[in-house]
Amino acid sequence: MRRFVLAICFFLAACAPQATQPAPSNELVPYATRTPRPTSTPNVVVHAETPLPSPTPFTYTVQSGDTLSHIAEKFHVSLDALQLANPDVSPNGLSIGTVLQIPSDSNNSGVASTPTPVPVPVTQTSCCPTADRGLWCFALVRNDSSTIIENVSAEITLIGANGAVIASQVGLTPLNILPPNAALPVYVFFPPEVPANAVAQVQLLSAVNLAPEDARYLPATIQNSAAQVDWEGRSTQVSGIVSLPAESKAATSVWVAAVAYDKNGQVVGVKRWEGGAIQPGGTLSFNFAVASLGPTIDAVEFAVEARP
Image (cartoon, rainbow, N blue to C red; front, side, top):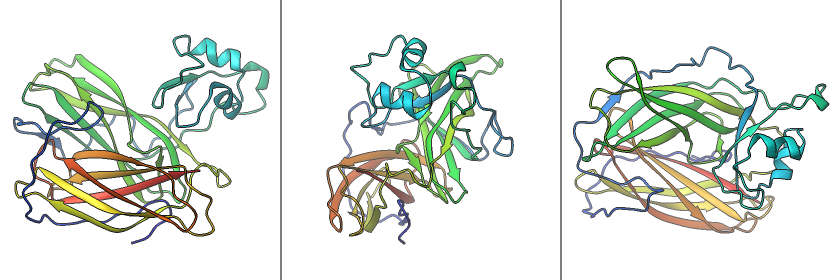
């Protein structure tokens, strides 16, 4: 099915043996695990029906092509104020994924200094332990609105049996955007050793409506998508074609996210593929593997993002 910016397809498992190898640290890697600990209902600190307050300062995740001056202009703050709020960030070495603090600016009190965060539901949480007692945790965020949502982040906190905080990390979705009527997981990895009785809590931190006139994302779609699950159900090879309409601008970068689910609809793995350029009316093929960190894979969901 074609959708603006997003294409989603589900596939049942097929038999095609395939070995899985450890991947770089920015990819999810399959391990021999203890019994996974998925939760059917999320332990969410901020509920979807509760409007999120506008935090001061607000957080923003650095994206491809961003500069400090561009970010300062975007949020109507001075460059000096932005640098003061982020003293450990080098203005000449911004890294994609860096979370910046966006301060309020008293000089422009007549203008909102930050976008208003929008409430989006966290529909599930699931955690999968590794053999060395590390823990992958997922929080599935869904956009039920009619607009694209950008800069989705959430804090995932591990709580011990005595109610004390064990660890906490901020997770991001694999794409910069969350399209309408779509879901993507926020995910983090807690290194060993995580207690077996730890429980994950999720707090949504940011989710911003994309303005209709914002031209930073292009109407890419996925066609001919397929997922071939290996005979053990531990890995799936996914493939497809990303296309741009002829009336679109050219894309300089393309990201495809594949999210693996078990038979109960719980997230068990996710991976992002990064591709190159596409000309208007052109296509780009992708092919990569996604590993399960818990139960066997039963279905795969795809999402695409293209930027000029």
